[in-house]
Length: 121
Image 1 (cartoon, rainbow, N blue to C red):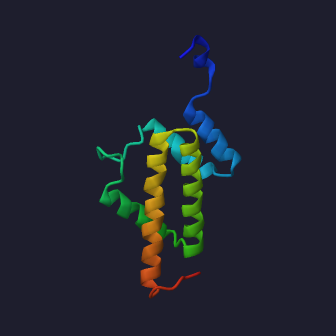
Image 2 (image 1 turned 45 degrees about the vertical axis):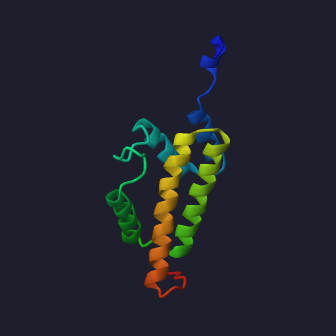
């Protein structure tokens, strides 16, 4: 690390700026908040606990997020994860993985509740 490296933007700020540029502002805000908390989900592995995962899914249910919106959000978190990966921000990759999993489980639940077919209400 050279003396002028301290003037370079951090990986986190580069990732957040790129997410905003890519119209991923909610993911950027979540990333910034996650970084402040040390990307901590109260587990040593950095993964969401089952109870936290259920709470996140319940929030989606309460908001009545339909399957198309959930699929779009999952895609946006996947894109955000790729941005983290491109900038070698591994904590960010793991952090986004948690939300990708939340949406994956939520979408599966919606499909199961609809007898396997998509629901669009």
